[in-house]
Every structure is written in structure tokens, then in C-alpha cells.
Amino acid sequence: MDARTETNLDSLLQRAESVLQRLEHVLPAPPTAPDWDAAIAFRWRRRAQHGLLEPVRHPHELRPEQLRNVDRQRDLLERNTRQFVRGLPANNALLWGSRGTGKSSLVKAMLNAHAPEGLRLIQVDKDELVDLPDILDLVWDRPERFILFCDDLSFEADDGSYKALKAVLDGSVTAAPDNVLVYATSNRRHLLPEYLTENEEARNIEGEIHHGEAVEEKISLSERFGLWVSFHPFSQDAYLDIVWSWLRELGAATDDVERIREEALRYALGRGSRSGRVAWQFARDWAGRQGLERG
Image (tube, rainbow, N blue to C red; front, side, top):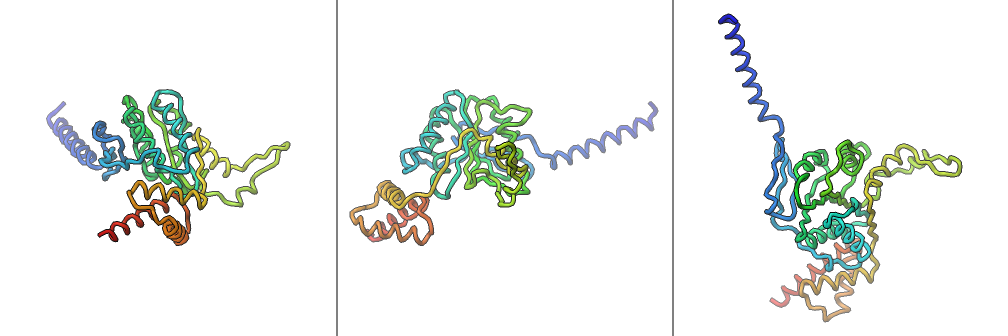
């Protein structure tokens, strides 16, 4: 190799090295594992091009016994979670139904109840579902048991991000690790919008109903959850029962039963809902007003 060729090769190598150095600032770095002892709950966050698990320093400390009038739902999720933390077969769970009825609160309560047994929670927003493979790589060999929590989950008709969730639930070439379950909450049973015109695609074939492709696609996502837990609107009595429970939890006086009842019902009427969330909000408002009156 003559001197001129050697000089050109050195120059080319220097230019290539310079390009690679610039690319390092653009390409996403592989995610790094957090301090697993720092918290029992984590959030997946994107910072520029980088993804990381961020410890939740002050998780919501709900207990299962604080949640009223969801006994059936609590028992179903409790049993499934207990199976999971003990290393037994368990199912991914979809908690669906009316807003404010305790879906998210129940998942948080499960975390607090079973954290001493090694249960951990990772909250993943819908827009970051494409990062699920990276998250699974971080937790694959860990001794803890992880719930991937997707709160208030729903997709629009043209939203393709749900395919990443489908792959994790069931359907990817790579198997999901045994120490991971997905718990999702949604107001929609099938997670995707449903239209009346889609029912027109259904066909009666030899006495059996066969749905059209659009309906089948939507059903196929929710069917990947082995456990469905449904939540329904509360009756007036159930709503008031939750109000009394939270007032006692907050240490408020409950002597004036009739006045509290009237105020609680008026509050719910103004909000257009008798949900557990509205009961909690009323109880906070009432307890706060009592505190001001006492000086």
C-alpha cells in the first residue's frame, strides 16, 4: 500500500468515526435498569430518544378493604394476583366498565397488598406501548413479579399501537416472561370504538353468527385477556355507603345523618354520577368544610 492510499484510508476512517460519534447522540440508547429497591412502583418514561423506568417515590397507599361495593371484582382480582405472586398460572386482566367505579384503585390496592411478597408495578401509557419489548428485557430475569399497568386504555380505529399490546398478551414469536402480567383498565370492553355499521358485516352460516373482519379484529384484542372484570354504575344506596366509608376514613363527624345524605345526593346530581370517585370527592369536600367550621 503506497503512502497516498494509506493517507486516503486514514482520512476515510476518521470521517466514519466522526459520523458514528454524531449518530450516538441521535440513536436511542438501550434502556438501563433502575434501582429496584427504590420503590414498589415505576413509570416508563421517554426522555428525548431514551426510555427509562422512573421510581414512583410516593405511590397511592390504597388498601383492598377501603374499596366498598366491589367485593366480587376485588375477589376475582385478588385470587388472580395471589396466584401470580406465588408463581402459579395466572391471567392478564382487563378491568372494564363505568367511570369512577374503582378499576384503577383496585389495581393499586393489589400492589400494596402483595408488595411484601415481591409484587411490583410498572405503569405504561398508551403512547409508549411500542416500548414494551424494551421493558420486558429489563425485567426478564428479575426475581420480582411485575404487573404492567395500562390505565384508562382505549384506541381509536386508526391507532396501530394496540398491536404491540397484542403481541405481549399473546401472539408474538417471543414468549412473555413468567414474571409479568398485564392489568389494563378501560371504559370499553373491547378497547376499540364500535360502530353500528360493523354489525352489518355479520353473517348467519348454518345457524351460527360469524362476525365481520372489523368486529373480529376488535374482539381479538380483548380476548387476549384471560380475566375480564366488569364494573357497573352504583345504586343510590351503594353510593351513600361509599360516602359514609370515606367520611369515617377521613375522621369526619357523621352525626347529622340526614343532612349528609341530602348533601351527598345533591353533590352527585350536580356531577351527573353516583360513582365511587364522586363519593370520595364529596367526602373530602365535607370533611374539609367541617375542619374550617371547627376553626
